Length: 336
Image (cartoon, rainbow, N blue to C red; front, side, top):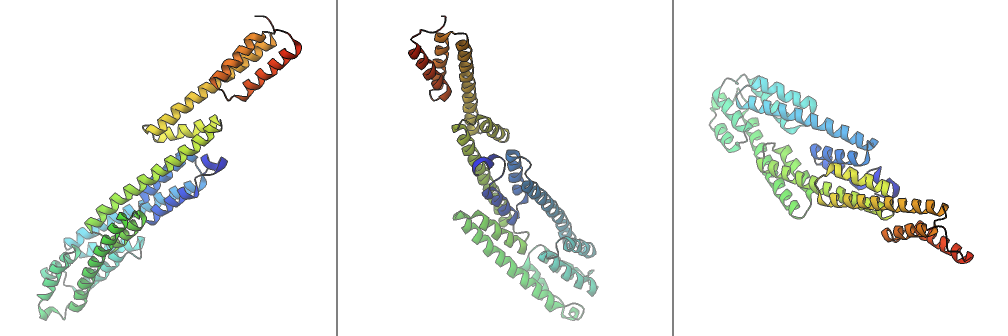
């Protein structure tokens, strides 16, 4: 944040936080940060664009989650035609979805082989869908050789080996992500977990840890935004720019109403504004008394104003002026 734009436009650093969260696939946290910045800065165009983008991507992701869950259930239950349709719908939304591509290819072979009614084929596919690759390999090895001409045994075997390799790779990515967290590299950890879950969507540990890391990162950035905002408000208040300073404090209090630092700054701002108003009233009253030639009373008003605000330039100048006039004329002042 810089100069006069600090309370009307988000900083480049704040916008980078949102882009980092989007790149990490955390659209919910990104939208949360966008909403905070919108409440602080107003409906700034770039924030509005980012909010719309986050909402669209989150909606699309939620749709994919629903389709993926339904497709996996259909595979596990042996409903291969239904599963094939669902995985194809996923590919329409996400053409590069590796899991969907894999299942569509495998299910196409099953449907074309016309062996979907065979128990052992269903068992192999179920084990495969559930990620139990060792069991799937054992079943494959028991597949009757006389059936091999009806079904591409070698291709299926290679698929299971590939899936097991992907799981191992996902495990390594998960470990690398944990290491990144230990070094405070949360965005890098989120990217690694996203890669792991692209390979193994059901990797429970990666999913849980990614969720925790997302929350931690979003919270840390929210705290950072709050601290920067309060610093800018304090700068304005220190320059006696009470109107804008209080506006910033009010906006912060609306977002973080129970935050101790926010409440303390807001209370201090209200006190400063009340003091400024008291000084302004005293100065105005002194001027009116001066116009009525009630010099001593006017001086007293301005002296009290300086007691309330020792750095008030106007009250100090008025006192100097009236005392110089009094000294120069040798008069005692107006009525008491």
